Image (cartoon, rainbow, N blue to C red):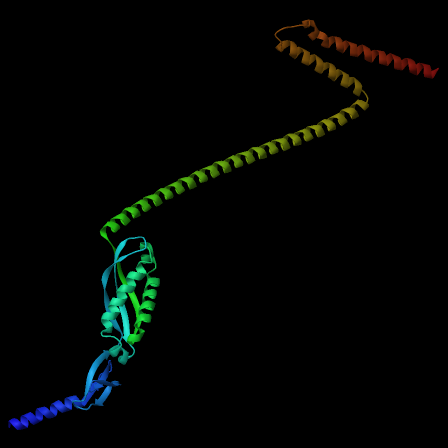
Amino acid sequence: MEYFTFTFLFILFVLYNLILIVPMRERCVIERLGKFRVTLEPGLHFLIPFMDRVAYRHEKREQCINIPHQSCISRDNIQIDVDGLLYLKVMDAYKASYGIEDYLVAAVNLAQTTVRSEVGKLTLGETFSERDALNETIVREIDSASEPWGIKVLRYEVMNITPSPSVVDTLEKQMEAERAKRAEITLANAERDSTIALSEGERQEAINLSEGERQKRINEAEGRAQEISILAAATAEGSTMIAQAINNPGGKEAVSFQLVDTYVARVKELFRLADVSVVPNELAKMEGFFAGVDQVSKTINNVESSVESRKGGQ
């Protein structure tokens, strides 16, 4: 009974070492008597028991490796802690097996070294603003160094950039000062804009007032010119009418009487309003005198006309 049990277990052991099933996500490196024989692809394979063995199994899927945080010194001598994620993939199982002892540990150490080197080339502000460029540079450097290992570095992502507490305190104070400066600049700009707007308003008001005054003067001048023109036209028309009336019979006598009447009325008004009299007040009674003179003049003219008519009859 024990013989059959031992035989059965031996057959199972031989079958286990004879048949190898490689999953889709893996690649297996086979050694025969300690020497590399072949890299097996996914599927069913048969091995020679006690001679062939699976020396290495490699994950063919993309792997994400957490890069622990490390202390770095930036170009402006500020201490910061940086951590990230490294994505890589095994491209050559033979090189990954015999090119380096442990490609995962080597990739982590290389990533940390490269991060320290690249961060040292940047200032603190640039490490925050140029993360994409930093990631690309780290990927390029690691990929170039890891090519003999049979792995391909796909990308690197910086997760956290943490300055030291003293630097954080300094940055907070700097940000507060920057905010205060921006507030003062904003207030100064607002005040300047307000002053400019007020001055522009005052200037526009002065322009409008001057334009209004100029237009007023133009209108007044045009009004006076029109008034003078109308008065002149009326005076001319009146003078024409007076001239025509003078040429009519009795026109000259009427004009003379009108002038005498106007003169006497003005003299009477002058004497009434004046405080000091330099001319005798009896001159105001000259209206009757001039009327008598006018009557005498008319009589003389009538006599002369009758005499001339008689002479003409003789």
